[in-house]
Image (cartoon, rainbow, N blue to C red; front, top):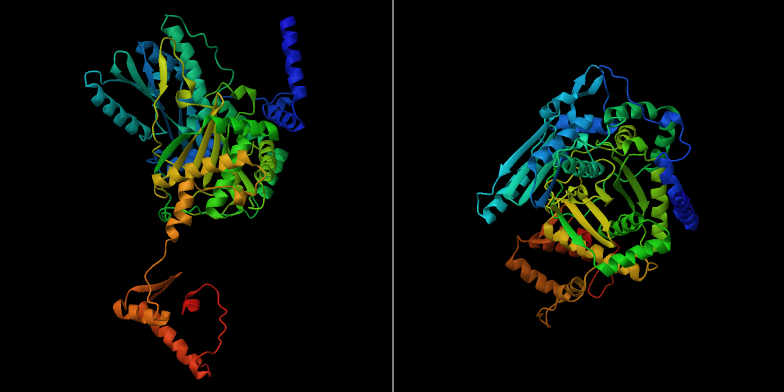
Length: 581
């Protein structure tokens, strides 16, 4: 009892020592988690079984996207880990079977009914119909060939779609490279899972594998509620005053927001948005990571807020836009009952911030902090309903409301999987799909910060993303060095790029006849290349011959007005073809 009292006193003292800002943030997060005096009506109860079970709001949007294009692999959630050591494949399969039995969402199919899309949960006895488990043995191949074959299978499984109206909603491939080295490939549709769920998968399969490999029964208790219970509760909870209050906030927050953030791309945006993607990962220097973490403590903000602010600056420097909307995923598990459930709870928030070059990082950080706290308070409103209510200008070529995302993750490859007697190594792989133009994932682990840019390959080249990564790191270095420096003055380019732009690209010296006038030289060029393009301005293109003729016509007009040699003529024109003429 004394130990408990000591822990309570220690926790109380730590809370009291928090700054006012951090204490306010903690209170809001606890409130969101349902800790405190939450009214009983917010608690999720097991649903009454009925012929019709609605989808959650997030599931419904995913189902609509699936109906539009069932072959789109964008919402397949793949993962892969390498296992080193002796693997008990039977215990592993038994563990996944138990997970499918425990979580109804893994035994769910989706169908259209007269009342709308409905989810149908199969009985526990149907586990084998919903788990697609296969063992693939490449151990007879030479080691290098086995690695190539495993990579090819990994890429194939990552883009193999699911049929949401049929079974086999969880796909597991166990690849044997040699008796003591295996790769587990994991794939599930996003309609039944999210990043948080990967942690649950990892935690449960570790416990179950340990038990089953020793011939023991499952030690995991049955779940109090299931995902379908949450879907029913969500539909009932988000009504009336709750709905109106949250909707009003988002309408005001996004009123007259820009439709599109036009990042400079390597190719024109396709008429129909593609989801072809890749990714590039990076690790910040240890010293820079430590400086960033120290800055967050100094400013009483979270690491998420600081890195998001830096991302806003990066986007501002690339686009010169001041009004920027960035999407960010939230766990969406605001009720304690949902924390142990596999399912699609994640909600997306649209964070809008005004970025001005005159502001310092420190000033912008405080503005971003307020935006993040406000969004946290209203995070229950589903993004799907927001799009429906706002009815933003739609285009087939880009996503509505925002086209860039930022996320601070705490889940690594394999969801942090640990199996007794085995060494787990995440299988690093490039993303094959990109849901948005550009997404920046960041993570902090043991005082080290790393990141990944996920990007649409129809818009960006890998070299562009490599430069963007360097620009972000350069900005972060400048921020920690002087957070009060105006954003527009923060060093952005690498020393090599500065040398290239300031010096190399300005080596414009060229041999030039000292006894000739410019218009004489131009006329000589007209004689050499009369039909080559001399001037381009917007949609206007003029050849050397056309430009020379128009200049001559203007000269004749000026002469007719009485202009002669040595007369002064004022020119007042915007940047245009006429100014050059």
